[in-house]
Image 1 (spheres, helix red, strand yellow):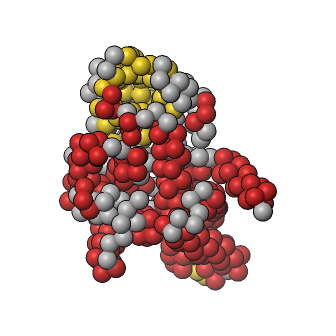
Image 2 (image 1 turned 90 degrees about the vertical axis):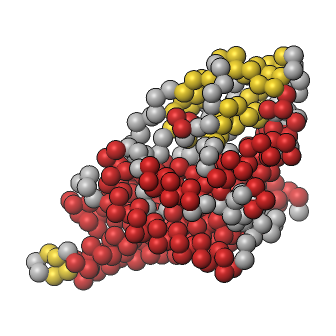
Image 3 (image 1 turned 90 degrees about the horizontal axis):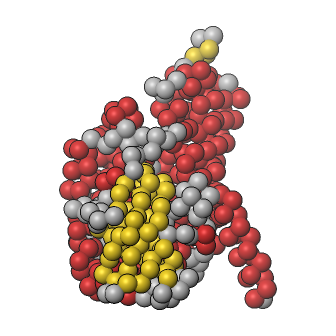
Amino acid sequence: MGTQVGDQVFDDVLEQVRRFVRKEVVPREREIADADAVPDDLRTAAREMGLFGYAIDEEWGGLGLDLTQEVELAMELGYTSLAFRSMFGTNNGIAGQVLVGFGTDAQKARWLERIASGEVVASFALTEAGAGSDPAGLRTRAVRVDGGWALSGEKRFITNAPLADLFMVFARASGEGDGQIGVFLVPGDSPGLTVGPHDRKMGQEGAWTADVHLDDVRVDDDALVGGAVEVGYRAAMTSLAKGRVHIAALAVGQAQRALDESVAYAATATQGGTPIGEFQLVQAMLADQQTGVMAGRSLVREAARAYVADEDRRLAPSVAKLYCTEMAGRVADLAVQVHGGSGYLRESTVERIYRDVRLLRLYEGTSEIQRLIIGSQLVRRARRG
């Protein structure tokens, strides 16, 4: 799951990313939103900084950050347009971690260096119309054929699909490991694989998602991750659990930005000649924002620590994602309220944040799914004594 790099090296990486985000990306947020695309020069800069492989081990050309370090980076990346992080998020996260944790040596050798460098963009193709937060309803089929597999099905909301060179396709097996969910490495140019137009979403402009159609897509045996069908479900659940801590950290970054925008506005905007930050009800809103951000930051750090220590890789990730994404929604709502009418205008930063953070409560497991995981885990632990 990543080998921790030295403190000084990581501090240098973190400072470089913080400076780049605030000086280079923040001023171009409106450009990203209006164009619904991240400019090529920012993509190139992200590659040169090693951001396409920060969570991939150094032996494969990545930075080798562990999750305690990754969340610190994510909180900085979350300070700006989430589309910027989305460019390389799947390479490091739910897609890349499938290979890091479960790929064969040959699969790692073929793909990981190119994923870490950004030469290859990887997508995690799990979600379907009837199978989102819970993959149990998966309908995409992988049928055993001579020397390989034939994949057919429909995927929805697949991040980076229009740009992807490699898809991690989750499918229910027929003919071998019957009924089990396997994960298959499918190159983006495979015959029978087509990607729909990118979705028009409420927010997160520039972070592209799309439908993926598989019509009798043929792959060889060596495309089956881990060389066994039964690896698939475990790979999905493990990648999602780790990803939930990362999403929680992004939520904290967005909430911090909303708070900073609110404080700056309250300190300068006036009503009747008095800065609105002098009004106690405005101060109360700022206080609630600050409390949420600080609590979320502490929770993310503790969840990451417990994950790396292998103390808790199930309950804490769900707790962190549930609390932090819900908190970010509340903080963003308060930010619009502090800004008043100007916070409802499209050119307002807090208006964009308000729309962007709404998605955080939906993907990689909705808030409702997190509550089910948390509740069931608590009961299970009690029964175990």
